[in-house]
Amino acid sequence: MEKEKIRVLIAKPGLDGHDRGALVIAQALRDEGMEVIYTGLRQTPAQIVSSAIQEDVDCIGLSSLSGAHNELFPEVIRLLKEQGADDILVVGGGVIPESDIPYLEEQGVAKIFTPGTSTKETADFIREQVKKKKLNRIEAPRQIDHIGIAVRSIEESLPLYRDVLGLKVQGYDTVPSEKVKVAFIEIGETRIELLEPTDPESAIARYIEKNGEGIHHIAFQVTDIEGHLDHVKQKQVRLIHEQPKPGAHDSLIAFLHPKSTGGVLMELCQPKTPEQNGGREHE
Ligand code: ZN
Image 1 (spheres, rainbow, N blue to C red):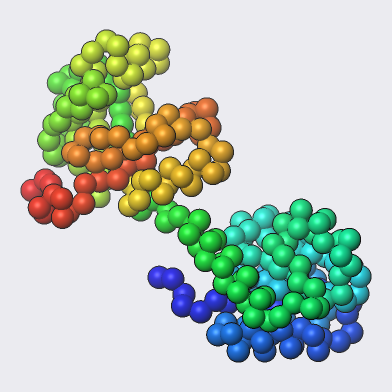
Image 2 (image 1 turned 120 degrees about the vertical axis):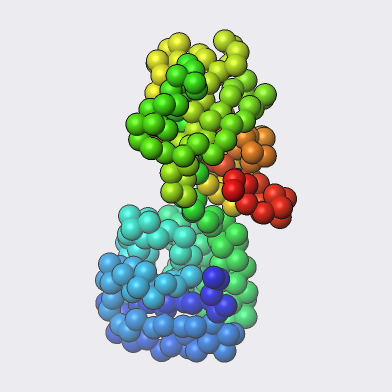
């Protein structure tokens, strides 16, 4: 669930001896309806990043008077990245010469507020940027939807799964767009899909020709396939399908390019919703 209030950590890295300015901005942001945590004086970048993660903040406001901002601010950004927390917005203020601002922004500080900036302006900027970052965040796949296994013949492969392993066959389908016949084998909340080519020109047929039978792909179940595709594209991962296309059981699917995924063919799969479905698919 999304938090209602924006959480901000006001931090003073380095050796500054007083914090009146930081306390003023902390109070001003509280007055703007944000939850503000103040770290106190003389924090190291590591301490700041650790507090920010612990307190689950949306934004870190760094204040520096000592002149060490060109070392300290980028170090905070670097540590956030290192800990996978670079979705936290970082802004800065204090005594910072105009000429240092481009460098700091290039390092990843979203904005440096100069002493003349009104607190309203600061708060509006934080609100807007945090909202943008939240939109960029994506819900992780909920589970493995299925594992696709390329087989020459479903009929010949099925006894292993059904009779030897004792798994239950849910049903069969053909996917004309992929020129493939599919057997769905239930295992807990997920499935194994046996994929038999119906045409020698299909991707599965070519796969078998090249690699033999075996594990072909892993499908991650997502609730917003278009959002995921946008997100993946932003992260410079190559796609086989830029747009979702119909898969088995009226799901929507798209494949990521194995060149971008360490040789593992990954599918994003958004199942047909129960509303479209009129209830459970396999009884
Ligand atoms: Zn699949």
